[in-house]
Length: 407
Ligand SMILES: [Zn+2]
Image (cartoon, rainbow, N blue to C red):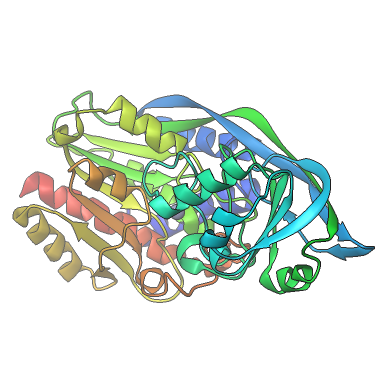
């Protein structure tokens, strides 16, 4: 298939994921529509598919309000938080040392400043979990406040481009919480010690989601595992993050159709990269426990196809001959460049298990990871995607695998 046809196919898949379906948060009907579509495409192209059911929670809010002495403050329910309707004294905390010494039992706690600077890793998040975050959570749970009000600024490194960002985004953390802009938090600070009323109409809903795996062979030894996550954050159509990744996976299903099975290929649509419990990743890990050394390589696609700049392939721990093959492919395709290492996606899971990996993304995104304001926001839509870049990534990955097989 030539690049023009492939670009058209990319556009058609992307329209379905981003325009017809839209936001694909884990547990939502739209998320299941997206995995059903991916499975259908894989089947039609002759791949044997398997879908793994995941027990997850979906989440909904009717909104939140915070009032004090007749004044209203703008707040949002923290994603995946429980709801609440509470009235009590407001206590303001900006440092961990202060939290250690303050009685917050049954109070409503305003977390602001340094203590609210970084998004807190979910309690049971398996891949990134700093000790200081777990310590903060345990202090809060022991303190047993009625609810939390989190005033946050912008932190692209931990929360993408969202402002304000939910300090907690964790369905396993049971203290009800809301979040607000840091500027709103400064106004609220004047009411510390006063009685405030907080209502958050949030609720958790038990639901299901699916991983979808396509295989072109029954063999498992030396297989190449190509991954892309299909879920989005709440409030975004997730074009770059990661409809383009799943689209490239579906284009590869077409391009790799007639390959030999010297290296079996597994196309894995993962569900949960942008969700607090990473359920699809955890399920994949469990099902392949102790067998990651059977895999030849992981190729993970996330953030590919941005309109500015070239696509980048970042190698991690590749054996020398494989790295040579990658360099040949990059040499042949000027629109693909070698990328610096980055770790904020599913290839990290494979690296942690000792499997070499290539991460495919957009160079512009990797270069601007800590400052860009697109990821996890409504700006991550089809307007920032270049469909040709998407097709080029698929062609580059296919060329690489072809060279590996026939070299
Ligand atoms: Zn992503």
